[in-house]
Every structure is written in structure tokens, then in C-alpha cells.
Amino acid sequence: MGKFKIEGVAPGSIFEELEIEKGDTLLTINGMPVADIMDYRYLQADEQLMIEIEKPSGEIWELDVEKDFEEDLGLVFDENMLETRTCKNNCVFCFIDQMPPGMRETLYVKDDDERLSFLLGNYVTLTNLTEAEMERIVRYRIMPINISVHTTNPELRCAMLHNRFAGSIVESLRYFADNGIGMNGQIVLCPGYNDRDELRRTLNDLMGFYPQMASVSVVPVGLSKYREGLAKLDKFDAEGARETLSIISDIQDQMRSQYGTNFVYASDEFFLLAGEALPDSSYYDGFPQIENGVGMMTDFKESLDAALSEARGVRGNDVSRRVGIITGRLAADFMRDCAQKASAVCGVELSVYPVTNDFFGEDITVSGLITGTDIIRQVPPGADCYLIPENMVRSQSHDLLDDVTTEDIEKALQAEVRIVPVDGAAFLEAIK
Image 1 (cartoon, helix red, strand yellow):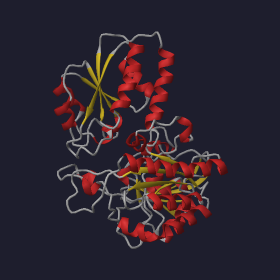
Image 2: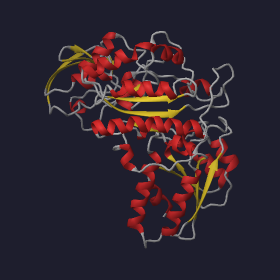
Image 3: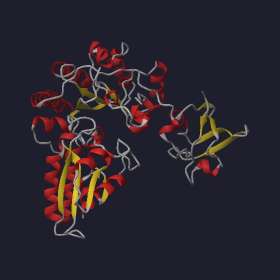
Image 4: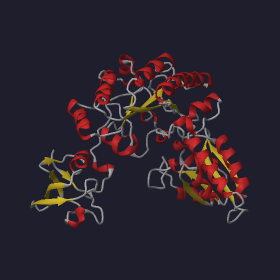
């Protein structure tokens, strides 16, 4: 404790100028010990710093630094530098428990770490936090913190998370709100557990923490075919999706009337399951939950429409080219509509290939959980190029969930495979 190993230094940074190197240890900043990335982020935010470094030889350097307040010292952060705090819950809906054996080890890690919430946007249940750690969040102004709420009913939350300490969520939210810590909330909705009246109760409670609780997303539980020995859960049908949207709409009416914001947002899946049209961008108030899959399709459509308006009359480089669009079953009709509009403007022949998720089970319909194995088995060759959304591959890699690579898919389909951001303008650029 109190020692922080430096794993990388940014070129041209203050650390590089001071000849601080990978392998050095950052001991203190202004006399305060540095234990992790959060200590570093908070303590370095000053104009006058006294930094204590230990070299691998054991030599101690004391360095005076003058810098701009917002200027970073130059530590290169990698999430692997954190000793991740793992989850102490056993949630009835946990998708990691529903994965088959034999996948890469990192996919089985259940993190529940407030530092990753701040740094990477991960959602946390708060059941891991000690009082001292909650105080540190307030002291360091670590925000926004993304919180997996699920329900504000103490008994129900303990039951859903299988953790007898999970029931104090309202007290934790109140502590953060009273201390001005910004939050976003998430509810994974499970039929028969936290839906209907329980959802209404939860949303009414969370409204009371606005504006510190800035937004809440509601997403349906995902159920794979690997549920042997797990709690019985049902998937949402059209009626359940419509009822959920109605409850959310009631809360939105109240929040718009009082504060001019919808506050709570249903995931795209609920609209598609209910057979309702996706809302326009005004519904999402700037898309605060888009990384959680909320509003992604609307954002894509409006971005594509804007790009198509600018591109009218401009044909692609090769209008005879055939492009295949690989997606999950959930977005298949949506992508067909997008492809039809894009083809009419660009003249490129576009075909949509929805992939049934045989790997996890056909009830998993989102594109982000499609595997390379299923793509190779189901998508026919014949296109000159295939597009896959970037949420199908691991960040900064070409690997899909089953470790099949885009290069493997290219060999199987005998065509180029392009990884495309989930953005309409980027999609249009990729097909030109």
C-alpha cells in the first residue's frame, strides 16, 4: 500500500522530461501516498507538486514540478494496472454465469469496481464499497459513477443480488447525492422480479435523486441457453415490453413537467419487442446512456440520414460493388431499412445478413454477442466486402467473443471484412 508501479510514460510528458521510466515506483505526491490510479488522478491536479519516485535500484528521487492545473504528468494508464475488485454478488440475471466453458479467462471476470466506473464507464452495484471508499469518492469527486440499481426495494435487491448487504442502495445514493456526486443508474429488468409495480417504485425513488442522478436506463434481462442450475427467469414478450414502456412514459411525463428531461430511457430492445417505432433523438436528451445500448439505433439512423442528405448525387467509387452487412437478428429489419436508403443514394448493392446466435442461444439477438463461428457458418460468400459493427469485436482488436478473428472470417468468406463504428456516417463511408 502506498506504492504505485509506473507501467508507461507518455511521450513528451512531464514524466518523460524528468526521466521517469516504466518500472519506477510513484511513492507520494505532495506527501500523500499513491496507491492506485484514483489517488494519482486526484493528487496530481495541482500547479505545484513535490513528487517522490523510487527507482528500481532503490534510489529515491524528490522532484519539484510546476505545471498547469489541468496538465497531466504523463502516466499511461491501462486497466490491467488495476487489481480489479471482483463482484461479491450472485445476481439472478448475471450473464457471466450464463456463458459456456472454454472461453478466454478474462470473459469470466466479474468486476464491481468503482474506479472502472469512473475510468471506463462500467456499472457497479456499490456492494463492494467500504465507508472509507465512499468517502474517497466524495473527497476526490470521482464522478459520474455508474450504478447498477436494479431495484430500490431492500429485500428484493438482496434477493436478486444474493447478497444480504445489498439492501442499503437508497442510503448509498442519498449519501452521494447529498455530497454532489453525479450518478447514472441502470436497471436490468427481470419479469416477475423487478418489473411492473416494483419498477414504478424504483423509478419514483430514483426521481428523488435528480439532478445528481442524471439518467437511468432500463434494459431487459439477457438469457442464454446455458442456464442449468440457475434461477428460473423468463424473457420479455411484446405485452411485457409495452407495459414497461408505459410505466417509463408515466415517469417521463412527470420529469418533463418538473425538470424538462425524460430522465429514464428504455433500451432499444423494448421498442422492438413491443413492435413500436423507435423514438427520435429528442427522447434521449443528448444520449447519456448510449454506451449502455440505449438510443444507439436512433442515433445511427439520424446520423445516416444526415450523411445521406450531404451525399445525394455522389456515387461510390464502384457502384457495382456488393457489400454484406452482418448483424444480429434484433436489428435486422432496421438495418434493411438503412441499407435500402443508402443503396438508393450510393448505388452500391447492399445485403443484410442477420446471424442467429447458436453459440449463446437464439434468445440472444443483439449484435454485440455474435461470435465468429456463427458468422462463418451462416453468412454466405459472394459479397466483395462485409461490414461488422465494432461492438462485435474486443476493443482495439480483431477478435470476436469466441476468439475467431476478422481475418478468419475473411478467409472463410473470401472477402474483406471491415470493422465499422456504430455510427451512420461511418457506415455510409464504409460502403462507398
